[in-house]
Amino acid sequence: MATHTTPKIDAFLEQLFAAPTAGMPRVFDPWNAVSTDDVAPAAVQGRRERLRLHLCAPAPRLLLIGEAPGYQGTRVTGCPFTSEALLLEQGVPRIGKVSDRLTSRRLPWREPSSTIVWRALREEGLADCTILWGAFPWHPYGPTSLSNRAPNETEKAIGMVLLRTLVCALPTVTVVAVGNVAADSLQKLGMKADKIRHPSNGGARAFRAGLALLAKQC
Image (cartoon, rainbow, N blue to C red):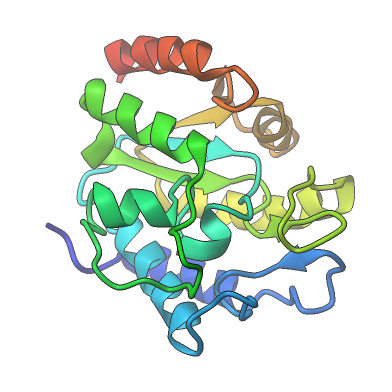
């Protein structure tokens, strides 16, 4: 299993961790900010390390771009399309099955989309060679920090800067938009990418079907 990132991924992480998110309203930065249910101060460093491990794919073939982190998922774990429960119970490639929690919540956070995504990736034999990211990489929330909202146009423009850096750091991968927000961001960057259905809001079957077609192509 790879344990080291490439220089380009290191540069990407440096750019991400230095991003000026503190002044962005109703946005939580999992890799710099402490949440009310965090096991502080270990949570921030734990999320950074889990993201680093996720990006250590030795031979990545697929880069799936979603919309944005949710309050039950990346906000807690630091890794796109994962949840605390998923990492504790099953684990994902490179991060593995973890034993330490980053939150003080009595029950581990669960996030339906992450379970659907990783189950489908395993079924199609793509789990080990896939990297996941978000068009807007930080958690945009609504009335409370434990809620989700769609990123606005200004936020998506900020996210596109990092998205471009990540795609350029992975020149050999097939880039795929998971949902409309990601597709729009990639189009504005002038990057050609297929689009598949996001698994949320009843889209699980269509997502699996789209991923199955991708598996035959890459």
